[in-house]
Amino acid sequence: MPNIKSAEKRVKVSKKKNLRNRMIKSGVKTAVKKYVATLGTEEANVQLSAATSAIDKAAAKGVIHKNAANRRKARLAKKLAAAK
Image (tube, rainbow, N blue to C red; front, side, top):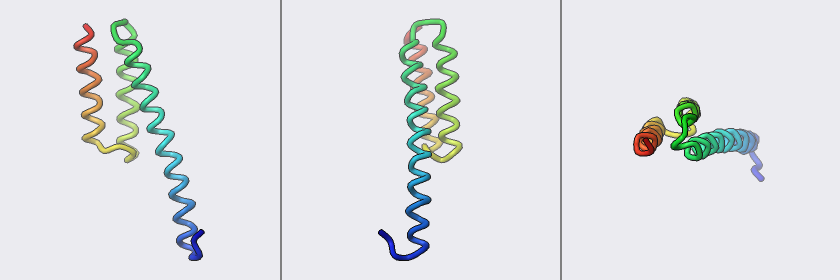
């Protein structure tokens, strides 16, 4: 355990941020899994927009890098095009 008050605060803050980041990443993974499960159906477009939205929100909050977010979205769109 840290002895300095500012170090104690950093531990608390980093735990809180870590939990938040994990929740957001988990939401992105769930949205992507739902999208992949619906490939080849009419619902794929709806799930693609939900997954894209989740990825964009994660990038806006700084959980993932914006270029990584764009790369993920492009790969999801490619999967949809290939499934048609």
